Length: 574
Image (cartoon, rainbow, N blue to C red; front, side, top):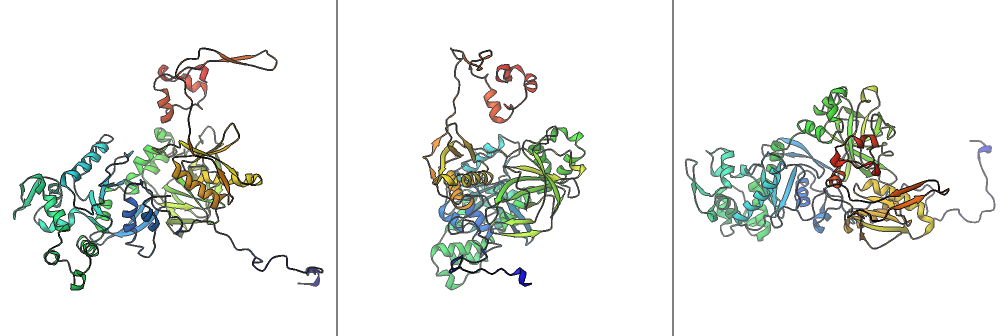
């Protein structure tokens, strides 16, 4: 450098920055650390699903507490994808992914079925088996769930412990029929599993079962009683070839039972084997996923082979990604997009088109071109960077979050992807019916709060932010706990300000029960035009069709006129 590049400042008697402030400020990461809150796999609050999946994750990550705080609270706060490489009972490793929407269910023995699944489940796991249960209670729980699932599809859940497992989450073990084959080595595994649920209490040397009373059922005598008998632990372990030392026999009851069960049942390998056997792979489930969620599945003949590529989960086909979730960056200034590659292969630094939920071939306004940044495999508390992701896999994408509000469809920018339509928005079995009004503590921080509300709406799929006629900023959620989590993120992550919160109330909606007796009218300022209105109830079934999405109030009038008369809204409503 020369003397002309040097600037000399004279007259300053103190530093411009205090000694506690660094000259180059580091990047401030905004996140709620593990000890304050955890991001576990989602599930209903009253089931033991987080605890079961925590025990599953300890098989590959024994030193990483993925959801320790969630198990302590007994509550799931946020979803968090998890990818594990787990072995089955034969020692073969299988990559398993779970985002909380897999077709598997954890049924708590004490509470029973708490949520009806939208689709039939492939696996049933009965948890909280840490106490000796009555046989008729267990059979009743499984029968109730099986009847509920069979109302939606003809496929029945097999009464085999390969598809129906029982767990004792406090013992970190799962029971399956493969562990009991030593009692009947000559009998087929499927037949033996079926007879475990019957009223047969004994198996003869030839492999035949003998009928007995319900209280002496085969499942109780073979499965429950040997597990919970304590007087003859050493003799039982010798008979079952379970190695145990003298010092281990002196343990307390619970640690000893956990140790024996782990060595006898081989950990969680049966659950992995059942998932591999009964849960379809991404390639096998691709056709059903396209038929259920893709909006252009009805016009598959004229889409240039887009549906065929997606149904085959073809990595060499047209690039289509269903983006379903937005995860904040470490500094909470933006978001990374999480989705599944339906077909094609996504590469880093690739040019793509982001299609919003309102995109159609006739109206391409809700679309934008973006360039993909880095790609990751999101695994709870850490990420693995990737260079490309083929069809059938999850991916976390950088650089395409700006035009996405809730969900989106990402496709290639070339001409072959011009016929791609959007995937339908996700459907939830809950609605945002509780609302709170918020305002910043300092009026000058209103722009920060508005920006935080926009980010908050992206982070929480069921959250809705709007402005009332009174000028209040209202946040709507599914419940008080949901809103409490959202407001914590608003204060600490997205806005970094203090806000005033009103008491939560239920959002009421006005309705019409009978035709108006008086006509209401409005006139223009020059009194030359008058608009007269009356209110009357809708025809029976129209409100249900609107809620189900069969009829939309945003449809043009020409489209409404071709509807059947029983669901036509009428010219006054259009």
